[in-house]
Amino acid sequence: MKSLWIAPLTAIVVAASAGAGHARDDGIDKASADAFDARMFAGPPGNKAYACFVRRYDAGHLAQHPRQKVSAIKLLVSAEIPPDQETTNYSFRLGFKYRHRPGDFDSSGDCGHVVAEDTGKEIRLGCGVDCDGGGIDVALSKDDKLAIIRLERITVWQRHKPDDDGTDALNAGADDKMFRLDRADAGECAELVSDRKELAALRHK
Image (tube, rainbow, N blue to C red):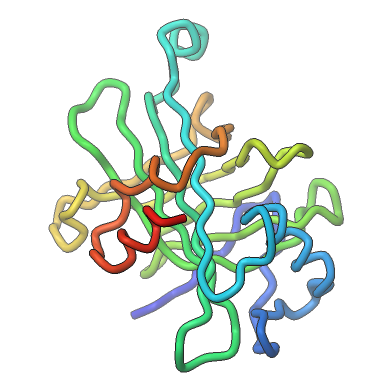
């Protein structure tokens, strides 16, 4: 039941095709994709790599954006070459808190390289949730210190309860279309990982 989300109008999603050592995206220049990966993961991703980005909005920011629904957000981007494959797989985990709603909420899915329509050449990651669950675009600031998330709609669920019927969606509003997150130590995103082996690997990065 796996369905890759179609990216928002800001980007063109390009279907992935296999390439030795790297997941080549059809129509994406390999050198440009490799350069983006090096920026995202502070070097070639190798067999396993993580990039963590975090933002906690203070009272001043929230006062200036009264319609923003999110008060804190974390993004973990992963790159991995599985033992039985020769290509790099990309995935994301998103965790956030609502401004006026208790609890922790998550989302996750697969990613692939996309070309941004608004620039015509910028490489981003287009990430989607299974079963037509929406998704996000992830770009980097020029100095690579910020992840820029753009969304229209994404399916979310209460933390550790992804199979419950209580799934919900975070829809882009006037102040929830774009989020700028600061690069952080990988351990800052540990709460987004439930697998023990992966958690151990993350904490050693």
